[in-house]
Amino acid sequence: MSEKVKNGLLVLIAALLVVNTGLLLKNGSSSGPSTSKPKFERTAEKKSTPVATDSKLTSAVDPLSNAAEKPAAPTTIMQFAEVKHDFGQVPQDSENKKVFTFTNTGSEPLIIENAKGSCGCTVPKYPKEPIAPGATGEIEVVYKPGKQKNNQTKNVTITANTNPTKTVLTITADVQEGV
Image (cartoon, rainbow, N blue to C red; front, side, top):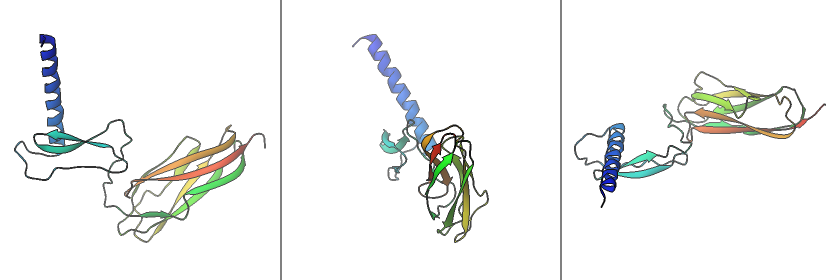
């Protein structure tokens, strides 16, 4: 085996050791052998790959996936009366409002961390304070098509302490030119 190949393998091994050590530290492991069971983290929104480290298995999140964070607070249930709305025909440069009503049907306070439209033409307003179990709330979505034309579909993604953490509301419209 040539010297260059040996040196390359040594560098690769060293890099893997650094990565594995970082994963162990991130997962709160001590330097000694563990008697705990291997940890696996797998959800519908995360892509995990088991990584062997000193006879342990930990999970590494695929950095290219759109991995959602686990909710910081205890989870609850957010139930909408409807998650889709069709404005029908609307003129360009109009302002179109839809209020989506929801109920916290879980046993913990509902905390909405964020609500974001799929483009600047779709702007949501959401409650910033926690919603008590059994209480209702509203998310107002304003759609301003500007110079868009024809059939349009826009989404509002809500991030909250629910499982899954993201809920998507959808609005559609047939934008008419010069009406």
